[in-house]
Amino acid sequence: MPLQTFFNLPKKQQNQILEISYSEFVNNSYENASLNRIIKAIGIAKGSFYRYFTDKFDLYKFLIDDLNDKNVNDFNGFINENNSNIYDVFKAYLLMIYDFDKQFPKYSAFLYMVSRNRSTPALEKLVLDYESKTNDLFKKLLEIFFSEEKISQPENIHFYAYNLHYILRGLMDYISLKYKINYIDNATKGLPLYNIERSEFEKEVMMHLTLLKNIIEGEQ
Image (cartoon, one colour):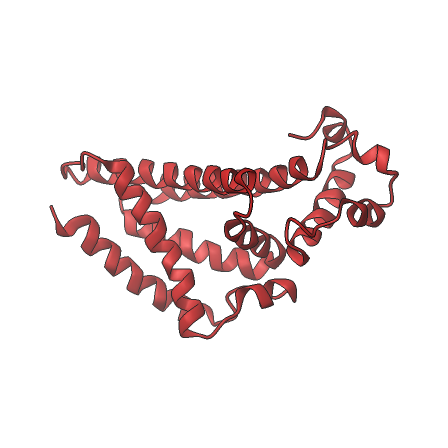
């Protein structure tokens, strides 16, 4: 977590530090990202930066947590609005990912880079913690679904939530393969990851939701 002196900064200055940092980690791997470049771009003394974050890892983790908190809040909003239909929630969530990618390609690119970087035990733990929070959201949604549909809940709902997460992540890999998209290339160029029409993206979403429905309800 940042030191309290970071939170004492005006919001505009906090955002400037974060925006420059996101750009650095998108354009470079974690290993190659440079605090010196970040500090120079911010225009502060090196000593001042270390009054905000203890090191590069501390900064990187906060960037992940900052976006993940937004993601959790958005997903909980979808659950509250559409909790009578699990498939409506997933559709809304996936289309939100597309819209978020179009509106904020830098953030979308950063999260993509994070999910692919497990080069050290510490980075591996960051990714697993990030994915665990998503799994918890899916578990919560599944519990609501099985309760409201009066369907017997599987004994190991964690297993269902885990696989649900990876089926949905498979959508990203499938789109890359089908539409010949190089996500890393798009990320480093500042382009949206999903450079296809929203209607095409939605069509792929609906195909995956059909698969999910067969898996969730097929064994009941």
